[in-house]
Length: 301
Image (cartoon, rainbow, N blue to C red; front, side, top):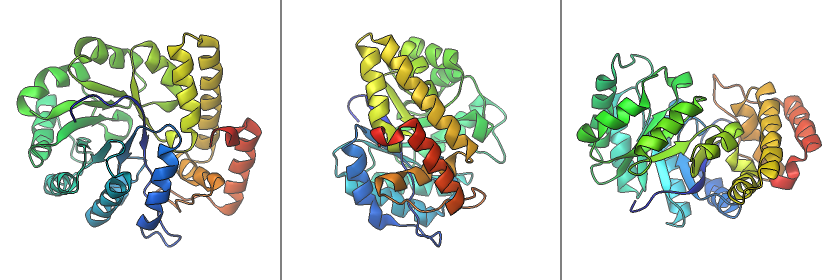
């Protein structure tokens, strides 16, 4: 990509049929829905897209379907991380071949890197499989267990990863995000990755964010960003609190399975989640629906 991505990037769902098989047929409709609702980029097959729970072939199908449906209207970043380096390289090559604007990868999660130099070496092998495609590191220590200093990564990695363009920073340490933006924001893209803390990110310089709840509440977050840019802190804080309440409700229903269910309210059924993520029962979905409608979520769908 020639320029940085601005605005809201949806960490897209991987739609499934009721039997758990992937459902690429709904992706064109889902893509149009999101683009019409303030989404300015896609992040495919990450945590929200259940990438670690999909087979390599399924991940290829999902990535290709989103890229085809987007048809160059907005950037598409494909997450290619895998504990098998060979499989990650295969996914990198595939993403590049089908036209991904960029790729991203998490560090190994089972046998973890012991040092940041080892992590960088691992990521470099993934990136070099797609040498003409921009690369981002996916920093999400709560899930990956790879909790290294991102300032050190941005200092050391460029010499080993020539295609490095930045970090998807999904951590609650806003000060760490600020350090990355302050020291390297002119050279690298640092995506803010905590939806319910977006105003915190904006206050320390975030101009782009990747998140799960942007799939169904992109309009809400667009209003937050617009209010913040206009200096209307009262409105930004008020709307951010809607996000806080929405996310709290969802986590009362196990988080990701709840997120994936909410698009049903907009007439887009992305199907169940895969074990060990337990899909909501019909009774749970009705409870979730009631609580979200009391919050006024339909206004933002």
